[in-house]
Amino acid sequence: MSAGPGNRSTNTEPWGSFDENLIQGGSSAVIDMENLDDTSGSSFEDMGEMHQRMREEEEVAAEAAAAEDHTPEDGDFLGMKGIKGQLGRQVADEVWQAGKRQASKAFNLYANIDILRPYFDVEPVQVRSRLIESLIPVRMINFPQKIAGELYGPLMLVFTLVAILLHGMKTSGTIIREGTLMGTAIGTCFGYWLGVSSFIYFLAYLVNAQITMLQTLSLLGYGLFGHCLVLLVTYNIHFHFLFYFLWLLLGGLSTLRMVAALLSRTVGQTPRLLLCGTLALLHMLFLLYLHFTYHRIVEELLDSLEGAANMVPIQRVARDVPQVALNATARSLETLLMTH
Amino acid sequence: MAAEEASRQLAGLSEVSISEDIPVEGDISLPMGSSRRDDEFSTLDEPVKETILRDVRAVGNKFIHVLYPKRSSALLRDWDLWGPLLLCVTLALLLQGGAADSDDQGGPQFAEVFVIIWFGSIIITLNSKLLGGTISFFQSLCVLGYCILPLTVAMAVCRVVLVGGTGAVSFAVRLAVVTASFGWSTFASTAFLADSQPPNRKALVVYPVFLFYFIIGWIILTFSPSQ
View 1 (cartoon, chains in turn purple, orange):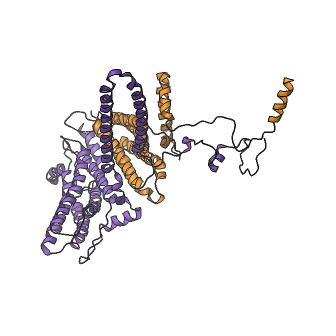
View 2: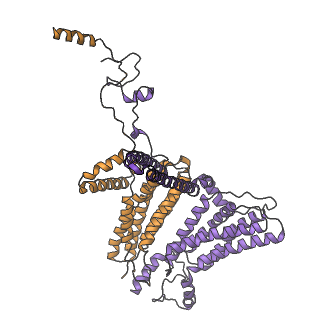
C-alpha cells in the first residue's frame, strides 16, 4: 500500500503509526498510560488518593448493584425494613464519607510541608556568605539590621553540631545510662536551638523588640557556626588554653554579631541590657558546657598528671599531656591495648 | 452462475479505497494505569518461589546499580524498600556485639542504628523536597537506603579486620576502607538524587547526604568489639 497524500511521517509501516495519531490528536482513542511520566512530582498522597477514588468507585458500583438485587427480595416488609436497611446504610455511608473528608482535610493542612517551602529558598552562595557574616559583628545599632529569615542554614548547622558532639562524646568515652548517645546529642542541640530561640523571642515580645520568631531561629542557628568551629578544633586538639582562646574569639564574635542585631531592634536601656545580656550569657555558657561536659574525665586527670610524667595505666584516655595530642581515637586504642 | 455473481460483487469491492492514515488492522489495546493491580490478582496462581525470586531479582538488580553508579533511572522508576530494610537490619546486626553488657556502651543499640538511618533518610528527603526537588518521597528513601550498601560492606570488612586485632595498623586499614566506602555511598546517591534538583542548588542537597553517610561511617569506624 502506498503512502497517502500529504503524509509527513517518516514511518515505514504501511498503516501509519500511533505516534502520528497522537500528534494529530483527533482520530484515535489510544493513550498509552505507560508513556506518561507519572514519577515526577507525584507524592504518595496522590497515589493513595487515586487508589482510594478507584476503590470508592468500585464500592459505589458494588453498592448500587447490591441495592438493586436486594430490594425485590424483601417482599412483604419492603415498606419498613427495606427502607430502614437502605436508610441505615446510606446514613452510615454519609458519616463515613464526612469523617474521611475531615481527616484528609486536617492531614493536608498540618502535614503540608509547603508551609515551610519559602524558608528553604536559598542559593549556596547566600548560605556561604551568611555563614561568614555570622562571625562579623556589624556596628550599626541605630537602624534595624537585616536578619535573613531562612531555615536551611540553621538546620544544617544544628545537624553538623550534632555530628561533632557525637564525635566528642565518643572520644571522651561518655557513658549514657538512661538513653542513647545519639538521642542525647540531638536533644541537646535541638533543645538549645529551639528552646533558646523561643525564650529570646518571648523576652523580645515582653520588651517590645522588633523581631519575629523566624528571625530569632535564624539568628541563633547561624550563631552556632562559631560553636561548630570551636568544638571541631578542640575535640581533637586537647589544649586548654587553645580552647579558652577560641571560646573568647569565635564565641565572642558570633555573640557580638547576634547582640548587635538585637540591639539595633530594641529601644531603651533596660530592655537592651536584659535581652542582649541573656543571649550573650546563654550562648557563651552553651559552648563552655559542650566542651566541658564531655571532658569531665580529663579534668580529674589534669591534677594527677601535673606531677606525674607517665600515663596512668588504669585510667581512661589521658589527653592533657603537655604535648599536643592530635587524634584521641588512635591514642585511646593504644591505651586499650595497654590495659588489656 | 453463482460464482460469477460472487466474483462480480467481489470485483466491486476492490474499488473501495481505505485511507492510509486510519489503522485498520492490528491490536488496539488500552493499558490502564491500574494494570499493576490486575497483575497482582493474576499472580496469585504462580508458585511462591517465582514470586519471591522476582522480588529478589529486582533487589539484586538495584544493588548492582549502586555498585556501578551511572546515570540510570532504574532505581527511581521501580522503587522498593526491601533493599534498604535488608541493609539496615544487616548493618544494625553487625554493629551489635560491641560491649553488650549494660555497664559499658561500646556500640550503638539496634534501635539506635535503625532510627538514625530511617529518620536521617526522611529528613534528607524532606529537605530535598523543600528545596524544590522533583523526586517523590519513597523514591528518595529508596535511593538513600540502597546507597548504604558500600558502608555495610565496609562494616563486614571491619569486623573481619577487628578479629585480627585492634592495633594502629588495623585502625589505618579500617579508616581507609570506611573512608572509601563513605565516598562511594555519597557519590552513588548524588548520581541519582542530584538530577532531580535545579542545577545551582545541588550543593544544598548533597551536604545533608554527606553528613548522613559521614555519621554512619563514623559509627562504623568507632565500633569496638567486646572482649
